[in-house]
Length: 161
Length: 334
Image 1 (cartoon, rainbow over the protein chains, first blue to last red):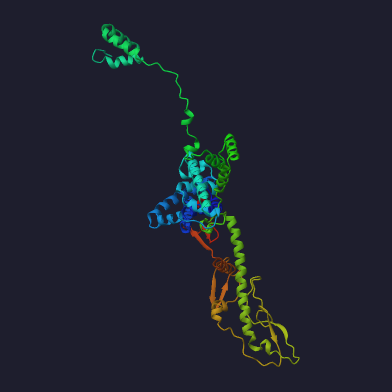
Image 2: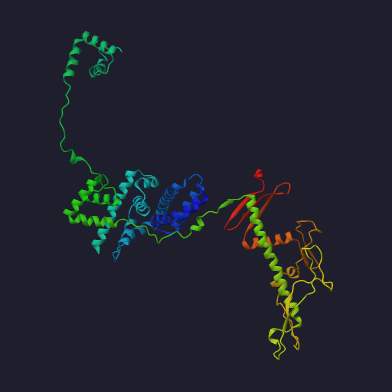
């Protein structure tokens, strides 16, 4: 990968990675760091990475870094409390995207990653499998279960309002 | 293989199952002839074999699991709705789903709910610090290209260097020549119209064009012409003075005069800048170098020239916040 291709990747993928990291980490600073680290790692190996595989490489790096960060953050005080606050959140106005955002926060990390990569970036099961280190069937199962959860969440909120 | 009454049992099982080779089978048969009681035992075992039957289990379908169930989705309509959303649904599954939707309004409602679970990327959220992630380009250029670029830069620098001393001299001349005249507001209004004339200042200047010093009749060389007001019946006023000339312009520059040497009388391409008695003398190359230095400082470039042991230029590297390039004079020296 040339410098020009690398800089092109910055223009093309940094927004997507930032959105993915922001959803995963729920913290702007951590998401910014995640993007910086992902591109830094790509730069270190840019001579050995094909430009066509750069996006996958970046998302893989971002995903792994996000999981590490989440594990680290879970050890800190307040994380569980924050999660519980989200779990008990009940929107007063029925805004589908807002309700969905709340629902996604309650998905297990692996399901959340899979469905974000699927919907935000349009990745196939195989590509998500490459990024997350799962096989295709596992990815499919996680996405289906996530969809079921999201739909039930929407229905439950719908019933509340 | 040795067969006797102590070890015959395990060997006989293999014999009955047909697992022994020809020689071992012959040994077993000889042993059975010599031991008829054991031969009867073998016949009993053969008769006790249960023949296979063709009985089948008719409720296999009840035991089979659907793909949805394997995923933990027990309701088949849920599975079909998700499969439709994910683009995994087959033709016959789509027909089944359509049938279910028609028959059961709840299935159609559920279908609509699933469609709402499709996320859309929030494109309003963008990563703002892209420029920090980008890397500087290193452009290798040929020496010829570098020479052209530096020649162009030197030309511009020369123009800048020429402009600046002339501009300064013009400014300082006004301060001097105005000493005998009044300011504009003191011009007479009684019909004595001031007129503009061109006079020659008595400034010495050598010429590089001819190699000779040109002089006028009075023995002094005409130099830069300065317009000044010449009026009569005017009261002299205090001269206009530069308030803080040392702060505005460096003294050495103020005192400098543009003097370009005759190339016949001095070494060609010298870069000497001499300062004698408050007067700086620039050669053309020295002037260009000075201008180039100023231009480089102004533009924020960092120029590094690497020399070899012989003192010749080996490598030139130019770097700025926007661009960097490097070139070697001799490719063999890389």
